[in-house]
Each structure stands twice: as structure tokens, then as C-alpha cells.
Image (tube, rainbow, N blue to C red; front, side, top):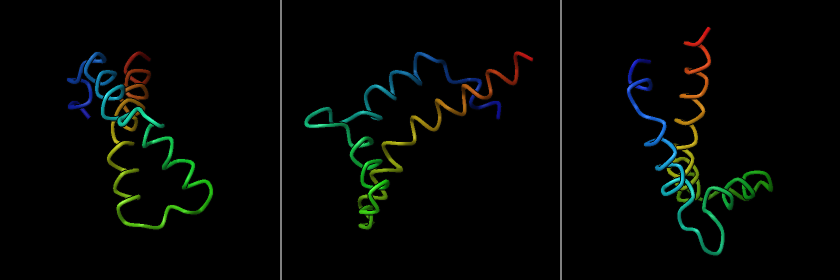
Amino acid sequence: MQWIDQISWTTVLLICATLGLAPFVPEPHIWEKLKMLAAGTLVAPLDWFDLLFHGLPWGVALLKAVRSLQTRQ
């Protein structure tokens, strides 16, 4: 897990703000895909790829946050 420690918070947040939220109009892809997942309409392979692709930065941010809390204690 040392690789996650080497990524700066600035980089993680920048990637979340760009790739994680792109495209910005009419709504971010990640939000659209999460709504589709909740509604049970996320069935196309491209939709799953979009969810994983746009969700990856948020997953890295979550992993980095958990790792930061663990290393403080």
C-alpha cells in the first residue's frame, strides 16, 4: 500500500475533480451511473465501464483517506 502514500492529496483531488466528474454538463457521469445503479438500469457493458472509469478516482481518494487515518494511529 505504499503506492497510495506516494500520491499527493493535490493530485488525487485534481483527478477526482476532472476525471471523476467529467463531463460536467448536463450532470457528471458518475452521478448518472450511480442513479442508474440504484434504479437497476445499469445493464450495458459501456455503462459498467463508465461507472468503473469515473469511479476509480473516488475509490483511490477513499483508499487514501482510510490509509491516512490508519497511519496516524
